[in-house]
View (cartoon, rainbow, N blue to C red):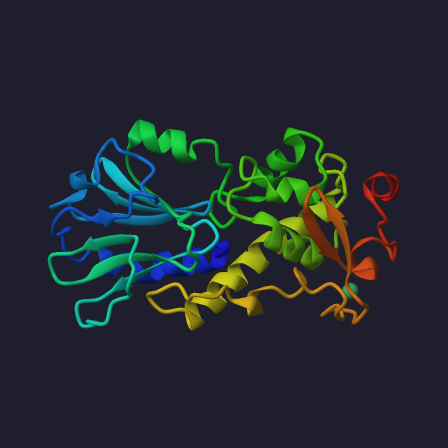
Length: 283
Ligand SMILES: [Zn+2]
């Protein structure tokens, strides 16, 4: 699944291209990926995309009072093809052609079409993304905003970071990365996190995601690569390998169908978390 930094870098890279000319005619979308019928795709024809943004893992292409929303799910990929690039991918499940010859094209890596595409008006958009928590890279997300997230309810940090209703777009992989950077236990209790832990968590969220966007901006072009950028992740999925900070073997715990990877010396005072019951005792 593409991660927040990959999507953010893509949005920044293609925003000016997709805005250069109006949508030429009715965009085409495979019926299996089209999730909203009203307004129809035809409503985009003739309109110009005036703002492109990422909200959580949704890509939003605003055109006046409606927006084309795309969620790539696991295997979906999308990219902008300028007029000069005549080689276009086969088997597009979304094809938005612009009057200048450019195109926004979505493809599926697998045989299953899980990508989600739709055109939404303001109430529809509210329903689609209104539940999302604050954007962790937004300017408005300051330490006080993180305090509000931590204090909203008592949660274990890993679960809280993965919950899009509390913080948008972080997910499993970056929850591991952020907590490792912050040197905090995945099972630390959000409301009981002391001030120094909160400061480290805030700094880690901004640093890890910001670094990820910068790295993707350098490596990615106008099209999301078919494979996720493995270099973004230093500990997630790397249990059994040395911690990049202290070289201790990274440990893991399978929890709520998610494998949480962590470094015992860096994050849990050297303790190895055995299971959920044990972790509750150790946090
Ligand atoms: Zn370590």
